[in-house]
Image (cartoon, rainbow, N blue to C red; front, side):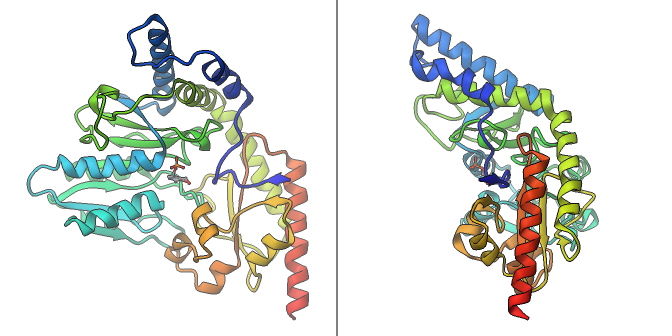
Length: 372
Ligand code: PLP
């Protein structure tokens, strides 16, 4: 199989598997118990926390572990609403956000929050003038992702954070597809990440919180994570996320350069007739979302079963629903149905990528001939 679905999930790095090994095999102690073994596990968790904080690279805050980025984003939004000062009852987000943000915001709207979902341009970028016009003293939190999972578009988070802070609001950013892939932007008060998108394990994420901006707890119980997120931590998963974050930090430039080369090779190998969805410049180039007029992408998927690529987010691909992100760019139904996402990264070789792109191009041309 040629794996080209790096936005859905990434292969576990061998270094991560090695770091997790002892915590799965022998070191089973509860990191919150007062025994010597418990202390050893707690120390392992704390080393991992520092590794994650270093990789995020923001100053003046700390990380709490969660079960996923979805949990971190739910917590950030719902917990911030829980602590909202009087009069701040508005959330602003963007039409191209992940479902973990959009669906949570919709749920909060059902509870009485005033929700504004801003559109994006054809390039997938948020218009900062529009955002500035929307910001007022009623805005509590603004949620904008750093790198989009479906189209790879990078929002200017530093500039966005400045506008949000000028309005006295809290800036939340989903950095799931950004960490380890691009340099993280300064500015956000709350940042969510996920282990399995950075060659770490599934079932763990983290929320970085600026001091003083911690959301109210969502999960109550044993008071772990400074009373902010109860539940026994898994040392194996924490150590795995820490090791993945350390690698992401160390290899960020190398991985980035590798991805730039892969992008150029993929564009060449696909040949003419394809249009990139979203900005080609304000983009992480490990995400190649392209369309070809008239092609049925579901048929491509069925024809090339040994190439793992996607029709959008993993969730959208499964449901058969047209992608809300491509719709937000202004693509019509046929254009969304003729789009595919190729995601590549650290372990993708140029040979396999070029082979896959050539076969995709041939299969698309075959379809055109059959349909002519
Ligand atoms: N945000 C983005 C941009 C994602 O791509 C994903 C995963 O698809 C998530 C959030 C959710 O992450 P997790 O799988 O850790 O819940």
